[in-house]
Length: 90
Image (cartoon, rainbow, N blue to C red; front, side, top):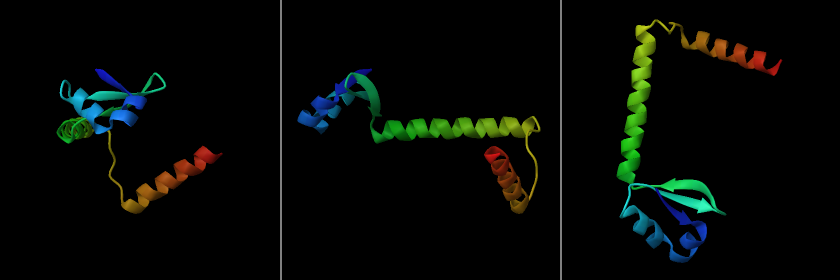
């Protein structure tokens, strides 16, 4: 994966990003020699986001199939969350 130094980004601006993205779908921005950020075209971001949502849906379906769920009202769920938060404080 190609990397762009923060200083190059400061001096060259978006042209530095466009140059990297012309060769790859992602570019890393490094700050003081450490990789800190990733930039990509919006189409790539939307694709990755869709993959992430598909994985979450598959995990939810697997949980339902394995019986790892419970049926409760919103009030019951809220009370359960409050109890867990109270236990974390103690």
